Image (cartoon, rainbow, N blue to C red; front, side, top):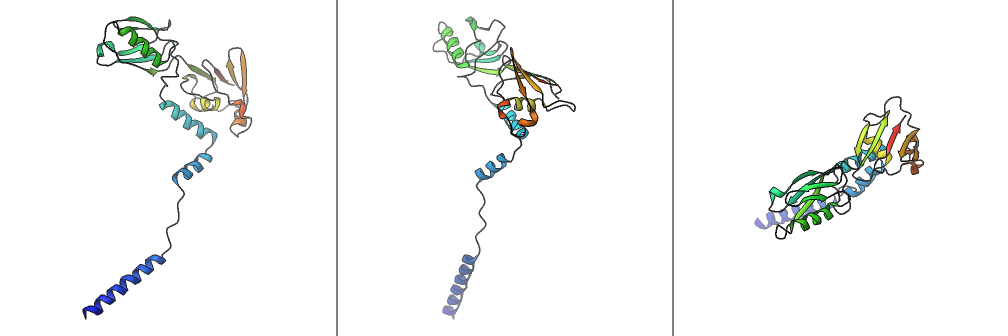
Amino acid sequence: MRTAIFVATTLSLAAGGVLAGQQAPPPEQAPAAQQSDKAEATKTPEEKAADARSAAAGAPVDPKAFVIGPEDVLSVKVWREPENSGVFSVRPDGKIAIPLIGEVQAAGLTPLRLSASIAEGLQRILTHPEVTVSVEKVNSKKYYIQGEINKPGAYPLIVPTSVLEALVNAGGFRDFANTKKITILRGSQTFKFNYKEVSKGKKMEQNIQLQPSDQIFVP
């Protein structure tokens, strides 16, 4: 009797295994990277520019490449010396005043180079000072947008920004804007920008990278 029950149970389990093996495997799903690439390919120029704007808003300043200018706001931290640390605005003459060492030239230097300069000055007073300089706010590099745009004004130029990205940053156009005859002024140079063409992927050479003090005018 026990032998019969054991054989019956074994046959039942074997049959269940065969049926399970015959079941169709679940359909394969596209890897997440492929799905992401497909979604990116279907985005409009406006959506891509909005993504770039979001990335720019959170992008840190490169301490090895960014060049400090007047009106930038800097954070200076001296390790174990809180009284010598603080937040400083670069004056129009390009300098900041650091406790213990006085006036220090900041404009024209990278945050990394300024850190070394302050540390060098503190060596006369402190032993092996460790200094870190970071940029809290960029005010020295800006571009400007005016005319028939929803948010005219000055915008910080922290990361590379194209004309299309700048227009999206400014909230798009007003109802009667002439988007075919946008002008970018750069000193004595004038560049034309046709939003209708660029937004359709045509004549993309118009979508230039902005430089500090560029002015965009939307008629």
